Image 1 (cartoon, helix red, strand yellow):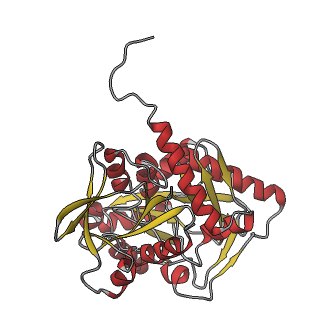
Image 2 (cartoon, rainbow, N blue to C red; image 1 turned 90 degrees about the horizontal axis):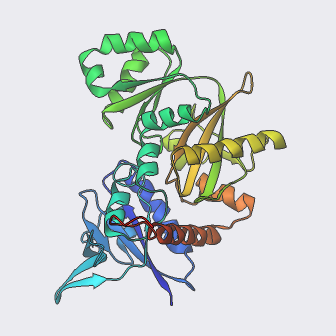
Image 3 (cartoon, one colour; image 1 turned 180 degrees about the horizontal axis):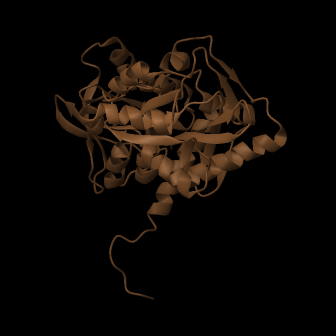
Length: 365
């Protein structure tokens, strides 16, 4: 029998549009010989909608977006409840495929909802998602795993608002220019600004605090940007690395999703030994956050001396037609449709493994 895969997208996030684009690609490519595909869209207010046109309707702002549905966090009766003229009916779902980039999607929140309902879902779990979303926590875990990083500072919004001059002095004394200011809990380069002087640094902070209460400020250097895709649960594989040649000064939101002048070099022009180094570090980063299913690990390479630094891990990378994650696996030998099937299988395997855990205290054998 075919399995029903609910692809969930949209959400209350600054990456709402990116999520819709990723989800549409996934809906189009899932193997129909094995899966029934059920698109689920979450609007900007947080309401859940179901239907074949829900993604397109959300993009166009056409209400109602679809059939109103609710998620049940009840392990004895998990799934979706549909509102209809005949009352409320349970919609059977075998596995959930969240494609919710950014807050309320890849930060452990919806993963916690799935865990409460005890249903299988694609991607990293609560811990890995939360750690991968919070750049400050992520960097602490990378340091614990001896992964090299550029110097950085963590600044809270409250401190910026009450002592901005002290914050500016700290950044200038400890990092200097150029530097990057980033919201700790945001993806797709939303809210990230490069600052080359004090005036630009003020603007960077003012922009970033609109998205998060916690900010990460990193030292800027002249770099190449290298990315590696990771796939697996306990047994983990890493793809060939790819290199980004951004259309802008750095790989910001527009360069990622709107400007066709950005180039992806796949595979990256690297020596075999350097390629292996990137792959090994990517797997270490994945394990540092206890990842499962998929992630993309991003690196920076100093153009002056060749030093490699880990930048971040993205536990729910983009799946649009120009996204690096599926393109890297295609170059490594796993086509898009096959990759999606592999991700579903990994999720089902992890769910079966979880069912082995006792939920009550057992006597010792």
